[in-house]
Length: 319
Image 1: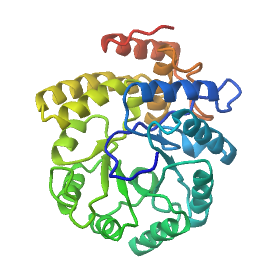
Image 2: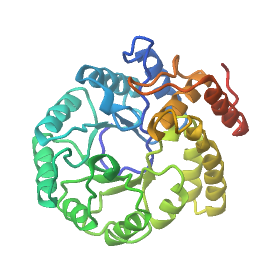
Image 3: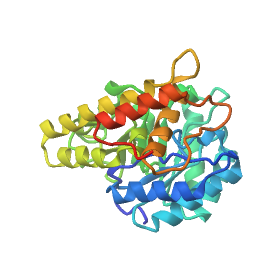
C-alpha cells in the first residue's frame, strides 16, 4: 500500500518473535501481524527498536521484513526501519527494504561518531536520493546521542526530503513546538509541508499529543493491545477527549507491565521488550517470549506480574 497521503493513526512497531534457536519465528510473526491488522491499526513499523533491530543480523532483518510485508498483503502500509551507524550502511538496508516491498523507510541520524546537523541533513538527503521511498526520521537521542532540531526537521520537511517524523525524544514540549511550527495544532494543515506526518513514540501521552496536533502514535504496547490504541485514536479524531483520556488511563495501567523485570537484574529496555513478548505469548499470539541474546529473560515471578496486568486490563491470558 503506497503512501499517497500523510500517514495517520496507530502504527505499532512490530515485535520480532524468536524461536528457541534464536532465529526469527516467522509463523509467530505472521500471527502477530494478523493480530495487529485485524485490530484496525493504520500501518506497521517493522525493524524498529521494539523489533530489536539492533540485535538482528542482516539476514534476520530481511526475514522479518519479508514476513511482515507478505502477511500485511497491502492491507496497511509497512514502514521499514533501516537503522545503522552510517549513510552507506543505512542505504544498503534501504535498498533491501525497497526490494522486499516496504512502503516507506524509517532512519535515525548517523551515530557512534559525533555528527553535525549539516551532516545529518546530508545523511537524510543522500538516503532519499538513493532510494525512492517516503522517508521518516526517527528522533531517538537516547540511542543515537543527537537530537533532531525543529529547524532541521522543518527544513527537510518543506523540501520533501522527509515524509514524517517518529518522535521518541521524550521532549513533549519540543514535539508541541514542532507541530505548531509546521502548521498549527489541528494535525492536518502542515503549511509548506502538507504531506508531512508527526507521530509520537510515547505510549503514555498519546491523547495529549493528538490534542496538540500529532497525526498518530507508534506504541510498543500496541503489540499487546492494538485495539485500545485504535479506540483512543478514534475518540480523539471524533473530538471525544474525555473518552480518549479514559482509554489512555487504561493503557497507562497496562504499560506498568514493563516494570516486571527487577532493575537489579536487567535494563529497562530488556524488561519492557520481555514484558511485551511474554504478554503476547500469554495471549496466544506468539509461541515464545524470548528476547535476543544477551538480554536477560523475565523470571517466572515477573511473567506472573505481566499476567496480572493483562487480567486487570480485561485481557485474560490463554496460556
